[in-house]
Length: 233
Image (cartoon, rainbow, N blue to C red; front, side):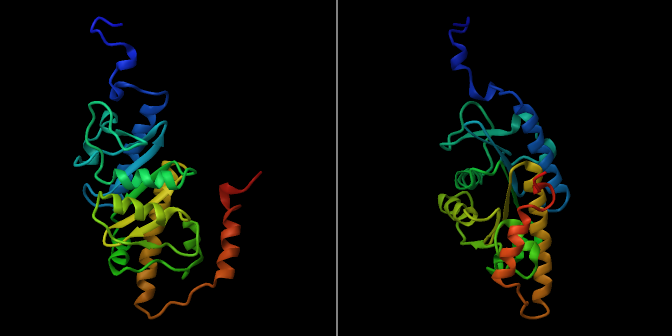
């Protein structure tokens, strides 16, 4: 027992630091800043998280990314609880948590309000196989999941369903979410989704797009397994 009468076991969870956690917190901040400064999510919109032991770490709600320090990043347990004296997590923490439950192979999530992804999501338009790079999200399209109020359990369930077989999806009347094994990969995919959204939006101005068929997309998806750094040496 300590002089205060509390054992180390009773120490506030927000004061506990696992090995490497401070580095991960800083990486989340760097990712959020890069997301915002690149225009993927204007102002304080969007949010970033990373899986960690027992739950996840996520950006807090209502704070400018430039003002966030490592201690401001919030730990949310896998049951949705926020132990200890912490800042409030992003209002979208529930769909981050549901995404990790749906995709145990993914370690990070980046949620954006990027311009063209929002435009397509508001029109209810998924991104089909107009270009082979659509396969970067893990399938033959990038779907739009149904609308639900931000921060709601319904939205969390919709996002989990949309990501069960994809690394990214659009959310109707909202934005986009991208997953990755690491924060850098999640951010890279978020950028790719926005590029594809802009390209598809512009293709639509020319008329009905010509799409690659499922057989060709199956070939592309198979090749992506050994593309670049995914290749086995």
